[in-house]
Amino acid sequence: MTDKINNINSPISGANLQNTLKGAKNSNASGSESATVASAGDVDISSAQTLDKIRESLASQPVVDRQKVDAIKQALQDGTYKIDSENIATKLIEYEQLLK
Image 1 (cartoon, rainbow, N blue to C red):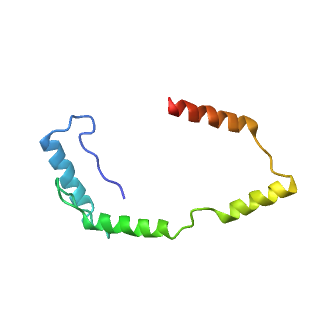
Image 2: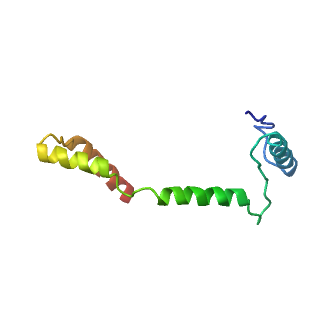
Image 3: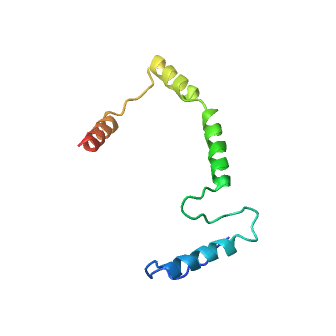
C-alpha cells in the first residue's frame, strides 16, 4: 500500500497539516486496519492494546539465551572458544567514549 505525500518541501502550516490528516484518514478507509488521527490528549485504544500484546510477548521470552550460554560453556571446556582481543579493545574504547 502506498500513500501519496503532498507538499513535501513546503513548511508545515495549519492547512498543510489538515490536508495531511485528511489524506491519512482517507488512505486507510478501505484497509482492514483502522487508523485514527488523534488530537492532543486523545488516546488510540488500538495502539495501547497492541503495546500490551507486545509487552506480554516480551515478558514470556527468557531473559537469557540458554542455548548460546551452553554453547559458549562447551567451547570453553573444549578449549575451542576464541577470544577476539581486538574486538574487545574496540568495544571498550567505544564504551569509554560514551561515558565522556
